[in-house]
Length: 294
Ligand code: NAP
Image 1 (tube, rainbow, N blue to C red):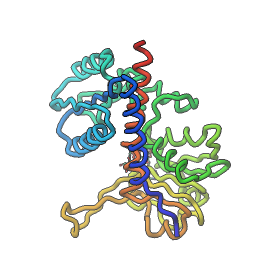
Image 2 (image 1 turned 135 degrees about the horizontal axis):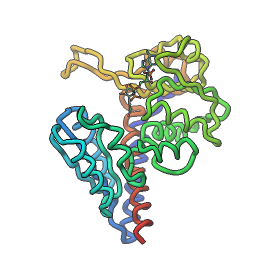
Image 3 (image 1 turned 90 degrees about the vertical axis):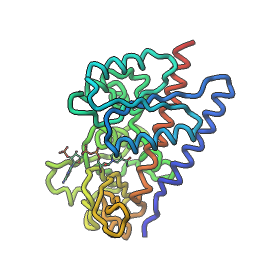
């Protein structure tokens, strides 16, 4: 039976460390890190993510404001807003909650962010830094996975890692993080056009599923003793739940845990780590901002 990787407890530990760091930082006479969160439109899922992030910021002693805008805001107005936040020295980090309404090109907005305030790590400069292994703002979800592996002492050196999914926010940065010197995994990435995905997955010592398909990874796709990281968050109907659905990952957990050595649950695995890593990036942004102002 696999050891459960407890993302909730690990995220709590990271958040407590961030809180301590912020306390120390402010005691040294610095102002608390400040994150500006931009929320456009009334998508309930986006609003709920933003509430979670704001709450986590407050708990960690950082400050944050959610700047909310009607879904009719134009791309030009949004770019002007980003410009203002970029040049405001009191703003350490900027987070634009995606997706944006159709009239706004997500890419243009991400490209407009000052890389030193891009705590989500989506700006091409930060993406490039992940590729070449320089410190920047790593995207929170794959960074959270690396943190889980570190804290559970899971060695990646020489291991065969298979990443399912090649999105810009999870799959691609994950591949690059696993490739770095010192991490030293041998990485294969699969996507919707990959042939024989079952066999490839079944060869993985470390299997990371980030595709967004409920229970895509069956027990047969898990090698005996593999480490299984489930990034997926999928809704499946469940009449027994008050909301009428429950959240499941991309992995058939019951089947996989019988073969894996370590496994993350959904919920309570990778998800909680994402916000914890965002907080870490926000504190880092504050340090960089303060250093650039002296
Ligand atoms: P995404 O942008 O939709 O990308 C999905 C990737 O999976 C794509 O590369 C796609 O291939 C691949 N894919 C889809 N169906 C496939 C199939 N049948 N076989 C093989 N590959 C397939 O998704 P994402 O943003 O990376 O998110 C992935 C999942 O993680 C979602 O469930 C999302 O909710 C979850 N997520 C969780 C967190 C967290 O904090 N835990 C954070 C982010 C995302 P193509 O490129 O060929 O289309």
